[in-house]
Image 1 (tube, one colour):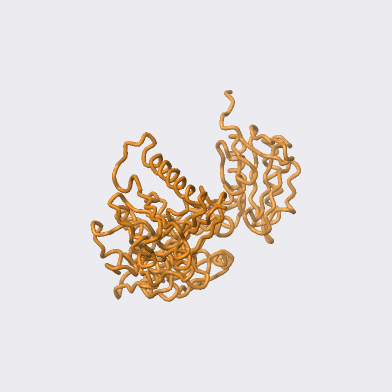
Image 2 (cartoon, rainbow, N blue to C red):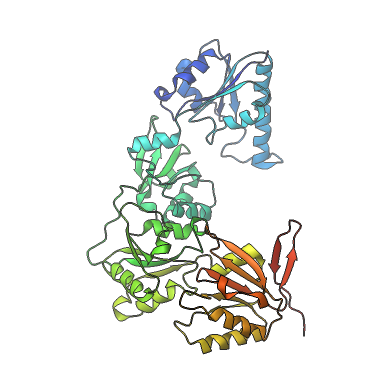
Length: 498
């Protein structure tokens, strides 16, 4: 009979935080295995030392590479792959001989631990039990005495080995975070925290529950003093006080594009700006897409008061508030960025910082659903005559159609505007064939999404409203029926020579 394999979680370092089940597994094992560096010292063994008996067979699993270089032909990964294969073979020999093997693991065996490499190689062949342990994440929060995440907050756990841009994006987008594997990655992690605007709230925990434990603000830690066994923590912001501003100081306005629908269309930068804002200002429908956060004020209004909304946001910023103006799609495409910048041109607002963060446009979202109709040159035109005369719209449609451009038509119709779509269709038919493909895309990304492909001659104004965008093909736009029966629209990138 084969022996049994145990992956034993030891907790974060303090031996008293080992579970009863972990102690039982060690006591019942014939072989105690643990990882160590070449110097022979093992943190895992030191945690469990008082439970290891003289009659236990010990199997030190010595890493061939830690921080040094290697001449292995496969590089670092090749050296480690060979090591894990050799180590698992050693443990398999004990298991085949009927011995019970306990592999000691700091923290939890399946959480960024080396045990998992043994597990993946052995668990399908031998009776195996994994005993969970207290993670360094939980230990760090406990030592800081602060909640990690509360209510509907999202906690993100990141390895510090990620590229700096990736760290920055994820830190900007989350509510709370823990960054593991510091050590040599610390300068990069610190820069990412600062770029994400989170450095002030970040905490540092070194050797949680171990001898030499250290707690500090992340901004106050010197890079050359950071060991591998440390973490950076962005704790829960639910009850955190927002940084106070100097009396008379000016805040800022950030115009945020939420994309055409819900959270799936938000960029990490936009998520971060929405989370950091003191006030959210916007059309109520768009504000409803943004999660409610403790301490934030929300100022919803009707969709037809863009100028008033922009000035209100700037007035809040003059009071020292950080304001996010929430816009659908991309704020610079028939949306709030222009309104805010126009209002900010007034003399009393010239000192208010204004930033614009891009979002996925309705045209791009509709094009992606339909295929690639915007694969060549295209023009974007709003059919709304509320801010410009219809004669101007018609002239632009004729010019774009005469130039054989694909057209993205925004604001095609509403309750009070019911004739523009029909007029535009008839005008375009003067330049385009009746079977020109038209993508009729409504509520892309939302619960009422409906995307259809029709002939230009068959475009029915009755099925078009303000939540619809129209993509009208050029003379080169094609429709292809795929093997699954779905139709795909695309416009070739190459245009034929005259």
